[in-house]
Image 1 (spheres, rainbow, N blue to C red):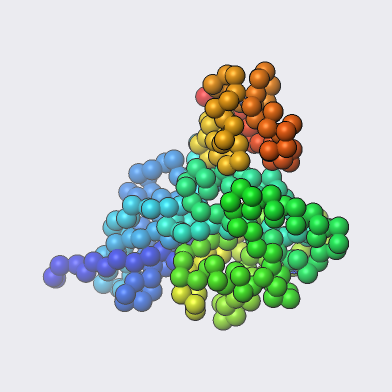
Image 2 (cartoon, rainbow, N blue to C red):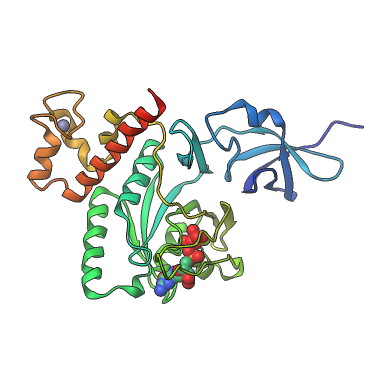
Length: 316
Ligand SMILES: Nc1nc2c(ncn2[C@@H]2O[C@H](COP(=O)(O)OP(=O)(O)OP(=O)(O)O)[C@@H](O)[C@H]2O)c(=O)[nH]1
Ligand SMILES: [Mg+2]
Ligand SMILES: [Zn+2]
């Protein structure tokens, strides 16, 4: 037999044992060599959706993944239900990450957004926020959401209000997804798959009912998958998350990833200030002076305490 064929492609879907790799020769169902799985124990998935890989084509037409190209970006989080030392890469090689929230049903969750933004800042990944189901807004909630929109926009994050039901905001969304690779992440039931179905009706993604009892989603999407957009580019739909876990961050480094905290960080009395109890803290002063919102500061304290608890849990 001659030299084995090698071909490069991008992983559009991973089911755990099989990967759909999109190549110049079409989609090739591929497997991993055992050694890749063992090589890096710090991650749940050494090969993620979005990875660029080199395949060797086997006799039966399937691929064997021989090489993973270095990632130039990633959206990752702490692996669920495991120790804080394990990373889960949601998607690799994306230009932009969107945190999708619903304004109600399930309840808007700013704590989720703030954890998401910490991870995108750590990974230096541009991020934005989608506030979906705005057809369900009443006057009071609309004012509240307008406040959050302004708050995050002031930090430099784009915020788009959308409705998969009425189509509101979808033009803006289409424009920002065009010719880029983007990812939609967020809690279950916020409408990630519904939004993509409206943008790209032939996708036919499965969408879920809401649980009447808890008003939470039912985790309808079970795998991350990249979809080509007819306007150019790709978008990844991902499974809903209960919480966006932060991976590999020392508590004292957290404040640097709250963008609006940055101008004040050098002015604390103690250089290793964690801004929760220390005297002469410039962050606490900035909150009192109205430069940092109490909501974001509270969110910071919540995350700080989980990071400190995480250190205890792992015995570090
Ligand atoms: N009123 C209203 N309902 C919506 C909207 N978008 C989605 N829904 C409904 O919300 C429910 C959940 O939608 P999905 O698209 O499955 O949510 P998801 O974020 O993909 O959820 P997971 O796949 O579980 O993570 C479905 O019943 C949708 O019909 C919206 O803009 N307005
Ligand atoms: Mg879904
Ligand atoms: Zn401080």
